[in-house]
Amino acid sequence: MLAAPLASAAPKAKARGTSRSQASASAEASRAAAVNEALRRHLANAGLSDSFPGYVISPSVTQLRRYVEADRVLLICIVDLSLRNEQGSLLASVRGSAKTSGSSVAEAIDAATVAAVGRLPQALQALRSNSSSPQVADARRQWELPLR
Image (cartoon, rainbow, N blue to C red; front, top):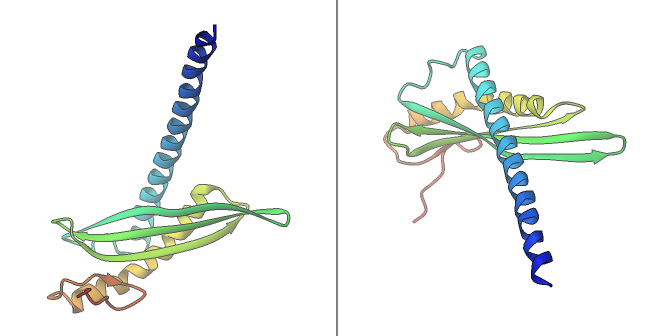
């Protein structure tokens, strides 16, 4: 008698988990598309589209949080742009952040991407001045020392 209710309950729990993971995957794909589109647009607007030959820029949304403060909803977004060579080695990393109120997720991602793209020239300059060094360039620091 007990086996039937347990057996019928198992698929329902699994189906709910599946829809949540599908929703999460859909939201992540939407964020990835938004950051990719924003990156292309802001690189072009800044005149940087052709500044990175031999490099690959990999954007990612590292943080996207929603906060309620008083009567408004705030979105905090951090976008990371990883600059890699053709072999896939990490050469530089820059981050941009944005705090928006009353905006959509896409607008928060866009604002954080603008901030990150604004740091790319400094990272590129650090890479070019230290091109013989295998260190990772970072726009917050000119470069990082390797751990020994």
